[in-house]
Length: 595
Image (cartoon, rainbow, N blue to C red; front, top):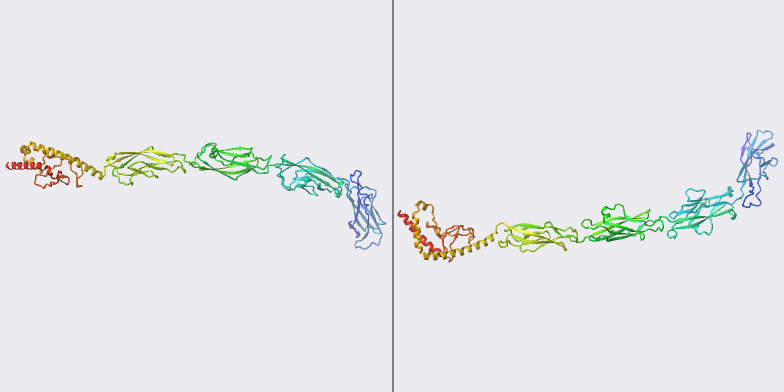
C-alpha cells in the first residue's frame, strides 16, 4: 500500500497487498489445484504524520474501487475480498482500491491509503502448437542460422505457431526437443524464445536422393511443466543439395611439348575437372578462359566430355617453331555457378623441317689473274638461308675445286691456287649449303681477268724466245747454203754497184745504214734473256758501219747479245755473211771518194 498525507498530515502505517486466486474457467483442460489458495486480507491503521497515534475517533471509507468486490470493516480495520466474485487473471490480473481516514472531530484532517489486489493465475490451458509445411534448408546453410521460430521471427526459414490461452506465469512457454530424437542433434532450440538454429555442418552430396529429410520434435510447455501442460509436434526439414563445392582441376598448371611437325589432330594433353556436388553444381563445361588470343583459338581445339568431366586439347593447325615457340592460355571449368581456372603451356619443339636456300640460283664473280695466293684474296661470297632457327638452322658451305676454297661458315670464296693461262678464262663449279640433313646447290662461275702475272710473262717470254731461236737457226742454215751456192761475193758487189745511183744526200740521211736483206722479224714482245728490255720488230742483227763496237757472242749457236733493246752483233753462224757485207761497204766508200 502507498500512503498519501492529507492536509492536516494523517497517513496509513504500511503498504498493503492482498492476493486472490482466479476462479478456474469451466472449459479449462488442465485440472485446477484443489483446493485453491484462499484470498488474503489486510489490516489498515491511520496515524499522525509524525508517526504518533491519533487520540481521536477515525472514520474509514473506500473512495476509489469496486465496493462489491472489496470491503473494509472500520471496527476491525480489516480489508477483505468478496468470496463470491469470480476473478479471471486473463481479464484483469490486478486491482487498486483507495481508502481514506478522517478525524471525526475535524474531517479536514485526513490521509489516503492504497491497497493493491493481485489476482493469482491458475494454469487452465495447455499450449497449442502448429507447425508449417516442410522447411527447405540448403546444405550450405551456416551454423547459427535460424531454421524455425514462433511468430514469424525475423530471418527464420520457417515459422511455427504456439498459443496458450493462459497468460501471466501460466502462459509462459518453455521450449525443448523431444528426448531420443536423433535428428535433433543437428539443431539447437532456445528454451525461452523457441528459436531453432542449425548447430552442425550439412552435406548431403552423398545422399542417393540428393537430399536428407529430418524431423525436428518441438515441445512447448507452459509453466506447469506437467505432462498434461505440454504440446509436442514434429517439424519436417528438407536438407537439399546445393552448388556448394567449387570445381577444381586436378592440376593447377598443365605443361606439354609438341614437335612443330606434329600433324593436325594430335592430342596435346588432357585435363580433368572435378566437383564434389552430385546433383546440383556438377561440371558443365571446360573451355578457353578469358584472354585467349586468336592465334591460340585457331591452333588448338578444346573438346569437353561431360561424362568424364574432362577435356582434350588437340592440334587444330600446323605449328611453326620459327613463328611461335610456345603457347600459354587458360582453361575454365564451370559448374554453372562457380568457375575454376588453370593455366596451360604448350612448348613447341623445333625440328629440321626447312631446307637451306641460296639467295641466288647462280653466282658470277671475277678475279685478277695476278691476284696473290694463298687464300687471302676474296673472290666472292655466296649466302644461303635456312628458316629453321634452332635444329637445322645452321648452314655450312662446301665446294670441290682445285683453284678455289670456301669458308664453311661465312660462304666466302677465296683463291686456292694460281690461275695460269693454261687454266682458261672461266671456272665453273657448284657450292653446297647444308643444314646437316638437307642440302642446296648453286652454280658459281669465276672469270679470270687482267694481265698475266710477271712470272707467267717470264714463262711466255722464255717460250717465245726459244721458238725464235729455233726459227732463226733454221733460217740461217737455209740462208747459209743459199749464199754458198750463189756466190755471195758476186751478189753483194752487184748490190752495191746498183746502190751507186743513190745520191750523197740520201746516204747522209742514215748514220747507220742497215741492210734490208738482214732484217729479221721477231715476235712483238719477248723477255730479254738477262732480264733486260724487249726486242722489237725490225731490229738489225749486225753492228753499225761507223766503226762502233760490236759485241759478238762467242757462244756457238746463238745469234748475238742484247743490250738495252737492240741486237749489236751476230754470232759465229752469221759472221761469214756479215763479213761479206762489210767488204761491200768498203767498196762503196771507195766509190764515193772517187766522186
